[in-house]
Image (cartoon, rainbow, N blue to C red; front, side, top):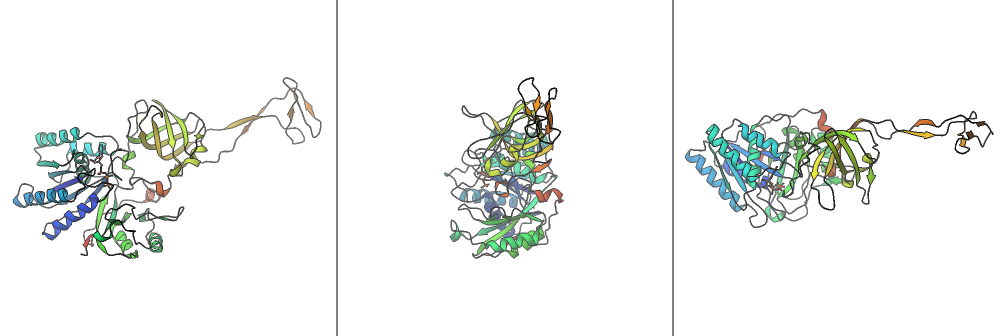
Length: 448
Ligand code: ATP
């Protein structure tokens, strides 16, 4: 089995690595090669500053011996396709890794797990490749263009595609015909809503009802018309058939993916040594009353066992009003990415979810109540209290503790759908088990 990892072929000006994978699969299947699985669409650390959009990379598994003549033919064809279908000179730094194995290799799986939440160097990717050659006698090769940073994602996608993931999802991506690139996407909104309702809860992030917005269509000049994500491949294909699309498709392909699984937030961050651009979670107690600044962003300090961390809850996440209801002493788990500190701004954790574990008791001290039921008024320091309604007076009373009602409850708080990252686990998936791959359905189609 040959594993082909590809990354960093696109730029904001156009193209898409998943579309290149679609073209590679088209080439492979039309030349008679067997694909044992759907390609894997890996989403890596979303807080990497040099990503183009969603930090995606793909891995394709094809049944061919890498050292055979066919294997060489496949590798040459893939290299040519990457060279001619990448945005070289416009910010793309493609990397392709070929591995002749279907069993996972520890250095690669470790590298892939780390690439989900840390910043990985190109040097470390090359070191892992050399280690696999030396320690496992692995048949592994790579090729790169530009600065070659794409090798990082290409290697990580191979690692994720070959390991047993605790969770996974699927996505069908439909591609536009070339003449439609850059034009408005002609997908009927009502059909998206109908599809969302009919396939609930087995598809996710189709439509944002709060903001009346279609979520399945991207906005750039890339070849993707739409993508439907979910847990069951055949339900996803049903969903595809339900959509009313008023432009011709080039085709579509199903991917297996780690999207919608929170895979980037699985690690607890070290509050005493927060590294810029890492992703993960923290446990702690709220150490400062939340402060909301202009623009609606809310900040609070979280006291974790190894240090204090400033947490930022940005307005577009929709979580800012929730954060405003927190109070000193509340126990939380927060997940997110570390924003680099600058001379103007401290390092902060950009909050992607909040789990309120325990709420602190909030009290106020007030004047005692009068026998008539009204609140007494202080007569001055050490002079006791009096009632202006019934005239009752008392000298030796003290202020009483009154519990302040909390307007937030324990539980999980997720961002608005429009602010979800590709990796964010949607609420409806918390009660769903990942589905299996189905090869007996039309998981790849080319119409032209
Ligand atoms: P798209 O989602 O449109 O495919 P993208 O957001 O995936 O684009 P790329 O153009 O692929 O962006 O660029 C991401 C770059 O970051 C790649 O070079 C990839 O190898 C690299 N990269 C991915 N994860 C990490 C990581 N954890 N550490 C360092 N580099 C990474």
